[in-house]
Image (cartoon, rainbow, N blue to C red; front, side, top):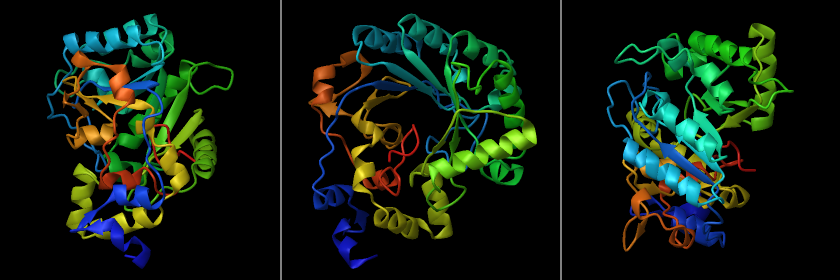
Length: 336
């Protein structure tokens, strides 16, 4: 570790708050524009980089009473313009369609973290078909955000499982057939790139150009934006790093790439994350680490107070170096 970062490590722990202090940063909440709702941990895949530890074996689901409370919050707070629905594969929650339809009735911008293969595979437990999804998304003008680790089969399947690439291509074709990704369409299709290892993503702009060129020339596919997201050193990816003996090296890489400008744009300043059981968190990564928002008592959708939430102190930890390295990382891609 470089000498100028020696104070960042205390008792073997990587101290993000110390890094902020050294750069005269405090990063308070700036707004609450997006409610990101994790409605299930069940998924038809079990990807190596998944910080949520989702898999077909998970059973956690958001109940309808909690879904309705999220909708009530959206209805009561016009300043929350977006709902970002995620999982797992969110489409495996039995109340998924209902949440999308009701959120659109409230004139909210609805985004869905769609893993593409769920359309082809269907529900891994019941076998229920999900081939209606592209048409459903189109009908309700949903912004579709989908992970595609690379535009080549080998690298995608290495990260997400055998056969995932070809299923993803088939699913993208179905979305394109509905008008997604076309320049003259309001139907927005965005792809997400995660590096297939312990390194930072390349330039988002240059990767987007490469993806668009390759997917169009080889498969006739179109999409709108590519978002680059740094792999967070938590859960499944951290376990992989530690198993290979690369965790400390990866953390050093993130710390040395700390970018104050990227830090100012971290998503936790304008987003709230909701777990399947209604607990509130500063971001999806904090949610997976159990770092719940507190204000005398734990905060949930059932004691939601937007004034208190805007005055809260965001909870940071060592994984936050992932969001502030290089060009930054968020659910909307690079922050710089």
